[in-house]
Image (tube, rainbow, N blue to C red; front, side, top):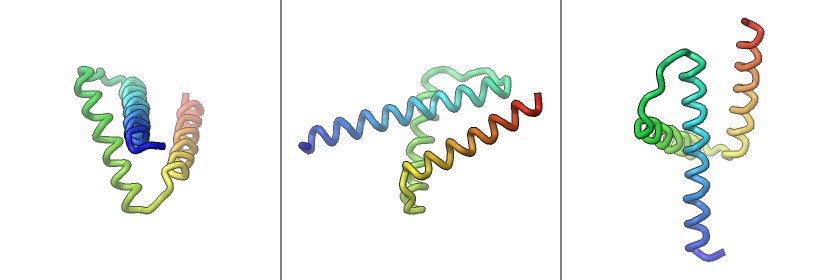
Length: 86
């Protein structure tokens, strides 16, 4: 894979991460009954979340896939607990 291909792949992965972060932020705000901010604010916030996640994971030396699996399980647990409350 050439350097240009790696760069393009990296950009696509970051865009996908920002999209996922934006969806999670939107879901969380809607779940709490809060109004959604303008799209440009959501874009900026999701980018900041992704960058901070990469910094944290880099410091912790964790594998991103392992962290995503842990986050998925925590999300499932929290979502399941919310269902039991209603």
